[in-house]
Length: 201
Image 1 (spheres, one colour):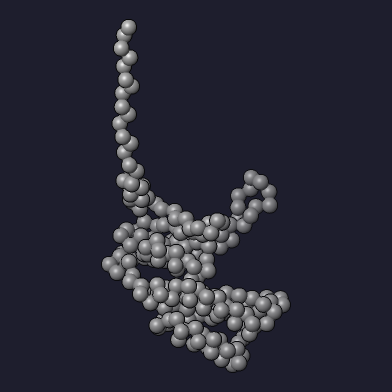
Image 2 (image 1 turned 90 degrees about the vertical axis):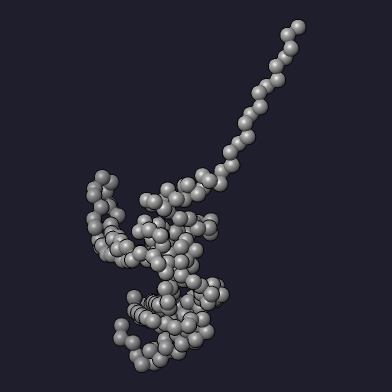
């Protein structure tokens, strides 16, 4: 849909309040407003430093959707305010991002039939520590995030579990490093003493 001047001004006003309060500098901003039947969708994306924050909401009124999306962004930024302010990237000397391909398949209506490829695309998995990946996932309001380890080009995935905790899927040398680290923390059990001998009668 074509945004009116009034809608643009409203988006800019709400964005400015959030950015001035929580972000040092916004390098990129993308706002998508769309209408689907009777629902008005607002998708607001901001890039500040290495982090990307996103708010996406819908309602029966576009102004309300914009406000809800900005409120979501503000809640996430407030949660990580101190960490964002004092953050020092873990990947200053890391390698370049890795290009990752993903594909979306349609559910097959009949068992045994091959799934139909609906869409495919590529994105860059950026080098991050696990802590950075969790923070980035939360800022984007996603359920998972694909990233690479700062010290290698191995791809990892952090995801939100149903119990509210986080899980990490590793591959390659990252998996070996994690396994080795876990193994190093396992204490060696003490030797079992021999059973005492009974004197013969």
